[in-house]
Amino acid sequence: MNAQGILNYLEMLANHSLWVNFSMHILVFMALYAIFSKSNEMLRCWIFRAAVSILFLSVTINAVVFGNPFHAVTFGILALTSLVQLFVRKKAIQITDSKRIMAVALFFIFIGLWYPEFVDKNALLLLVVSPVGVIPCPTLLTTIGLLTLIMPSVNKIQYLITIIMGIVYGVIGVFVFKVYLDITLLILALYAGSIYFRGLSQAKSRSILCSPVA
Image (tube, rainbow, N blue to C red; front, side, top):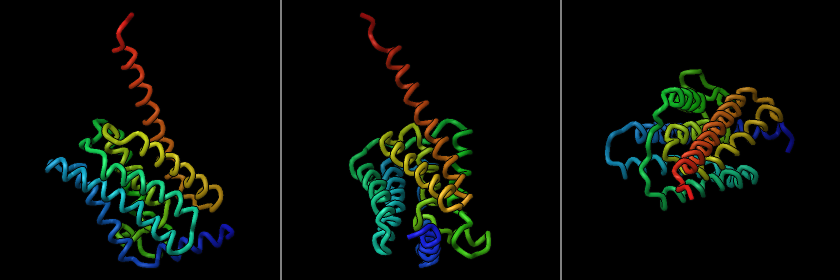
């Protein structure tokens, strides 16, 4: 399938069921509530990780049903890593202490929720029916933003895999499909990557400082 064929496929998928789009937005708001809420920590963890898992699973299922093996494989990997966190990881989620990181993450989550491509609705209605959880790029914008918000407690492997997928889809979107809005995904993925590697560097420095001297 050529680039125009893929774009037509994405448009069809994005408009296939606006109720599904709307339900995915509800999931994102539930994940945000779990991050900022002061309620039971275990419940917050379950809500957040379940929401992220369902977002990835939704894209995977749509790809399987509508016959896109590339999306099915890539988002199947993302869904699997998220489900592992849901059922195995017990660590509480912790919001970032950095106001700058929080502001950047929330901005890109907003772009993912709004994503004015493929769905032919007015700007206000797009806030509740854009194709987040249905097609890859707005889903990755939103989920990378959500994971960045809990960076102190995010699983590093899950974060890295999601960042890599963001870079891959951002490059494809901008340079192959000419969907220039996807530059936002590329920017976010690179920003998240810088946070990831800076965290690794800081952790390595701390381990060196704390290691016993022979």
